[in-house]
Amino acid sequence: MKKPFNLRLNVMLKNSHYQGLYSLKSHISILKDRDWLRKHAESVLKDGVNLVVEISGEIFELKRNMVVKLFGWRNTPSKMLSPFMHSRATNSWDNAHWLLRNKIQTPRPISVYTQRQFGIIKENFFICEAIHHHNNAREIVQHDNLDLGTKVHLVELLASIVQRIHNTKMTYNDLNLSNFLVQDYRPEKIFLIDQNRAKRWLVLPRSRRMNDIARMNLCTCNTLTDDHFCFLEVFLRAYSGERYKSDKILLKTSMRKRFFHKELKSIRNRLYR
Image (cartoon, rainbow, N blue to C red; front, side, top):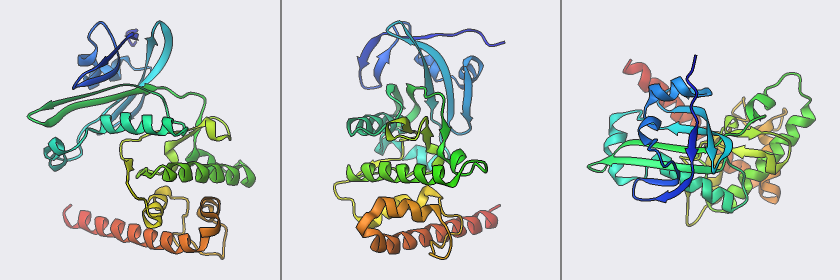
């Protein structure tokens, strides 16, 4: 049986390591401890390179559930390059605030922490509010018993959200359907998660927009042809409007590049297995 734990956040703090709501009792050491988080979590949402858990807490004495994302490293080269980059937790914090300022829904950020040693990132975590009573967009689109009209409506809503993101000169760089949490079929009830790969640009050409959209995995045939129904066609028509034809050419190019890179990676993995 899990021991009860309640994270109390009641002080606003900003320094070189920590930003956001903070507890008077030091809680940083426990939030860096994977075993402790697994043991005390309300639920474990993801357990791999990154650990994502939901914990109970209080913010200024109001009971709230929060999600803690503790980032890890996939490989040593990335870790050694970390002195020259922001932590993924900091990226999540900055990008979440950017989205909210532009009225795009994402779980509200609560705290962020990055610890470095000789510039190398040792630990970093991001805390945000928990979103309940939702399905992710992939579950809805792939649900066999949902009518087609509902799915089409959702895909069109996703297109409008992605268009708004791109209009702020941001690419999300992780636009897969699982990162859209849907509470209801309204833009204000659809939340984007996993913001750490998003990037803001001074100029955002259509080709870069299409590279972002190519990650959506809405087209199972990978051809984007007109001879059969395709959710990516629905998405692109809603997103592009009058630019549909020119965007479609760019998107096909982006999809071919992604397919080629996936095949190359698969061959490389087989060679070095």
